[in-house]
Image (tube, rainbow, N blue to C red; front, top):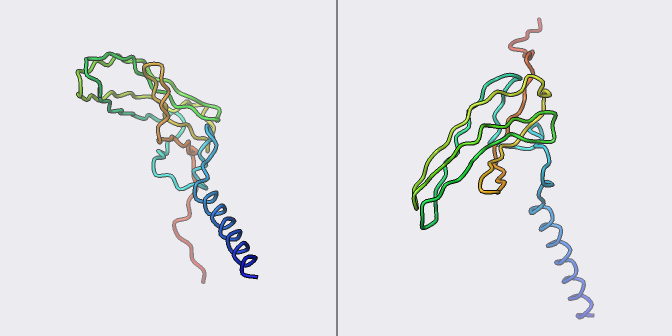
Length: 149
């Protein structure tokens, strides 16, 4: 009887632990569009169609010699719009840092409600960042007061 009880308890512990592991470690699929209405995201910038934005990216050469890279950025997503910056050349001495900046505009045809993610390209690397642009409608109606008598 004791052996059956211990097996039952051990099985229950494994099931509960598996459920907790799956629940707390579940990640969204790669490349999925961020649903800013459902997911709490702190790195979402709200912009309207055609509105300007600015991006700054700080880099550090962690190597032992001076290096030169071609660096570019883009906003990409599973939406109907994307944007690409102009490549810049970055030369850094060992352990030095530099910040590169880009400016752009959300395309006029960007779908309202869509999102695109900041991607940094350098040295044949693709580095998705945790920054998103969310396209807002050009017009919004908001109730600022109401009364009932």
